[in-house]
Amino acid sequence: MKLRLKHCIAALILLAAINLTPATVHAQTGSGGLEDEDPDAPTNVPFDGGVSLLVAAGVAYGIKKKHDAKKSTTQE
Image 1 (cartoon, rainbow, N blue to C red):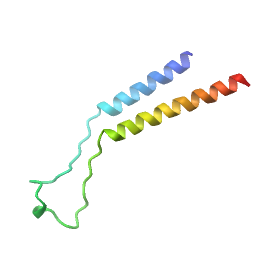
Image 2 (image 1 turned 135 degrees about the horizontal axis):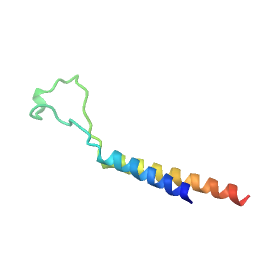
Image 3 (image 1 turned 90 degrees about the horizontal axis):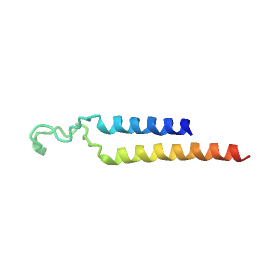
Protein backbone atom coordinates (compact mmCIF):
# COMPACT_ATOMS: atom_id res chain seq x y z
CA MET A 1 0.00 0.00 0.00
CA LYS A 2 2.83 2.38 0.86
CA LEU A 3 4.58 1.57 -2.42
CA ARG A 4 1.44 2.43 -4.38
CA LEU A 5 1.16 5.73 -2.53
CA LYS A 6 4.78 6.54 -3.36
CA HIS A 7 4.14 5.83 -7.04
CA CYS A 8 1.06 8.06 -7.05
CA ILE A 9 2.95 10.88 -5.36
CA ALA A 10 5.84 10.52 -7.82
CA ALA A 11 3.41 10.60 -10.76
CA LEU A 12 1.68 13.71 -9.40
CA ILE A 13 4.99 15.48 -8.88
CA LEU A 14 6.04 14.62 -12.43
CA LEU A 15 2.73 15.90 -13.83
CA ALA A 16 3.01 19.12 -11.82
CA ALA A 17 6.57 19.66 -13.07
CA ILE A 18 5.51 19.13 -16.68
CA ASN A 19 2.48 21.40 -16.42
CA LEU A 20 4.22 24.19 -14.53
CA THR A 21 7.28 24.34 -16.74
CA PRO A 22 6.86 27.28 -19.09
CA ALA A 23 7.18 26.45 -22.73
CA THR A 24 8.23 29.04 -25.28
CA VAL A 25 6.28 28.69 -28.46
CA HIS A 26 6.71 31.05 -31.39
CA ALA A 27 3.66 30.60 -33.55
CA GLN A 28 4.16 33.81 -35.52
CA THR A 29 7.29 35.64 -36.49
CA GLY A 30 7.73 39.37 -36.85
CA SER A 31 4.50 41.31 -37.35
CA GLY A 32 2.59 38.17 -38.25
CA GLY A 33 1.98 39.21 -41.83
CA LEU A 34 2.37 36.66 -44.57
CA GLU A 35 4.19 39.07 -46.87
CA ASP A 36 7.30 39.09 -44.62
CA GLU A 37 7.72 35.33 -44.44
CA ASP A 38 9.99 33.17 -46.54
CA PRO A 39 7.90 30.59 -48.45
CA ASP A 40 10.54 27.90 -47.83
CA ALA A 41 10.67 28.48 -44.06
CA PRO A 42 9.17 25.74 -41.85
CA THR A 43 5.82 26.44 -40.21
CA ASN A 44 5.84 26.68 -36.41
CA VAL A 45 2.96 24.89 -34.69
CA PRO A 46 2.20 25.50 -31.00
CA PHE A 47 1.45 22.66 -28.60
CA ASP A 48 -1.63 23.21 -26.47
CA GLY A 49 -3.07 21.62 -23.32
CA GLY A 50 -3.97 18.47 -25.24
CA VAL A 51 -0.41 17.20 -24.90
CA SER A 52 -0.66 17.51 -21.10
CA LEU A 53 -3.92 15.58 -21.14
CA LEU A 54 -2.36 12.81 -23.21
CA VAL A 55 0.59 12.56 -20.82
CA ALA A 56 -1.76 12.44 -17.81
CA ALA A 57 -3.86 9.74 -19.47
CA GLY A 58 -0.72 7.72 -20.23
CA VAL A 59 0.47 7.95 -16.63
CA ALA A 60 -2.96 6.95 -15.31
CA TYR A 61 -3.12 4.01 -17.74
CA GLY A 62 0.35 2.86 -16.69
CA ILE A 63 -0.58 3.01 -13.01
CA LYS A 64 -3.77 1.04 -13.69
CA LYS A 65 -1.92 -1.63 -15.68
CA LYS A 66 0.69 -1.98 -12.94
CA HIS A 67 -2.03 -2.24 -10.29
CA ASP A 68 -3.91 -4.88 -12.31
CA ALA A 69 -0.74 -6.91 -12.86
CA LYS A 70 0.07 -6.81 -9.17
CA LYS A 71 -3.50 -7.76 -8.30
CA SER A 72 -3.49 -10.77 -10.66
CA THR A 73 -0.16 -12.11 -9.28
CA THR A 74 -1.41 -11.91 -5.69
CA GLN A 75 -4.64 -13.76 -6.55
CA GLU A 76 -2.81 -16.67 -8.21
